[in-house]
Each structure stands twice: as C-alpha cells, then as structure tokens.
Amino acid sequence: MAKHFLITAGPTHEPLDPVRYLTNRSSGKMGYALAGAAAHEGHRVTLISGPCDLEVPEGVDYLPVETAAEMYEAVSRYIGKAQIAIFAAAVADYRPVNVPEQKIKKTGNTLTLELVKNPDILGSAREVFGYKGTLIGFAAETENVEDNARGKLQRKGCDFVVANDVSRQDIGFNASENEVSLVYANHTEALPKDDKYQLSLEIIKKSLEV
Ligand code: C5P
Image (cartoon, rainbow, N blue to C red):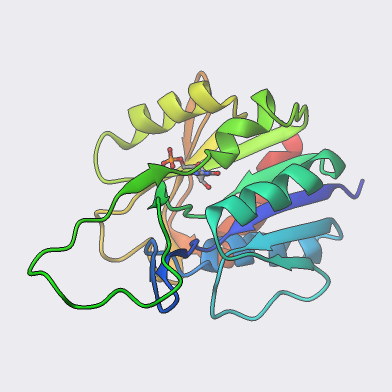
C-alpha cells in the first residue's frame, strides 16, 4: 500500500552576514535518491531540502529551505502527515548568534564567531512533534560507526539508523556509491556497496518492514 514519506536532504546554510554562511559537506545525493526511489515505488513523498545542486525527482512534493531553523519549521508542519520519516539531511549543529545586516569587514587579525546550537530536528520528532510513525535517521561517523549509530537510535527514538563510515574516500560524500549498515536496536544489517539509488530502493523496502 502506498505510504506518505517525509524525507530531509542536503546541507543547511547558516548565514554569517549577507554574503557568507557556514555549512556541512553534503551533496544531498542520498536524500534525493531516497525521494526518487520512494516516488518510483508509488509512494507520496515530501522532500524538505537544504540548498542542493540536484534535480528534484519526478513526482515529489519539494519544499526548499535554507537554514536548520527553516528545516525544523517545515518538518514540524509536515511530519504529522507522514507514515515514514527519513532524516538524511546534514543539518548544521550550530549557527551564528548574531547576523549583521552588513558584510563583516576584514579588520582584526583574528575574528571570533559566537555560535549557538541549532534544534535537533530528528531528536524532536518523537518528543516535540509527537510523531508516531516509522523514524529513520542517518549517522555519518568517522570511528566506532556501529556504537555511535546505536546511541543515536536510542537517544532519538529511531526504528533504525543508516550508518556510514565517512572516513572512507570511495563512498559517502558526493560519491555516487555508498556502503551502509542498517543499525537496529538489537542487530545490524550490512548492505553491500552499491549506487545510492539501488541502496535507496533497499532502504525504502526495509522502512516498510518495520
Ligand atoms: O547527531 P547527528 O547530527 O550526527 O545525527 C544525525 C541524524 O540526525 C541525521 O539523520 C540528521 O539528518 C539528523 N539531524 C537533524 N537535526 C539536526 C542534526 C541532525 O535532524 N540538527
């Protein structure tokens, strides 16, 4: 039966001034592949995406945002309609406290930025938004991949976490292929290395089995 998916994708941009921003290394490819795969399988998809240079997959409801705060707001509005939520966005953990209206000038030799924590969108799904559906997070780790992913699963109330080792050059960031493990509360399932679209079809299938 067709389900409604909510998928977050891409990085967020956190403005420093009118011409600069802080961001994360994320192409958005994994989230867009998931959205395309879910739509291809006949599901309804709401894609909430930070700034990406990618074509929006056909048949997907697309909601572009820029900052983590905007992504939080969009997710809070739409998550109630979804049965399956997949958080593949690389959200900036912090944003500048003050954003001047004018460009910051090159005056001193050093420049100190004061940052404040952004809301944890995935971490708010259960506790703040009261979401009861299937919840899937991503964990990009450089060490102790499985343990860190399982910690996230428990803290954020996920059904499973898609974990990948971003210290490897051949997969992950901006690559078209990825090799991930699905980390559940009591077991882990390693998926073979594949292109992001084939992996997405598998992740969509697994999300329907939860
Ligand atoms: O804790 P960490 O940020 O590594 O968790 C990664 C997971 O949490 C990803 O699924 C990411 O999309 C989500 N996340 C989020 N909001 C944040 C930070 C991360 O939804 N502010």
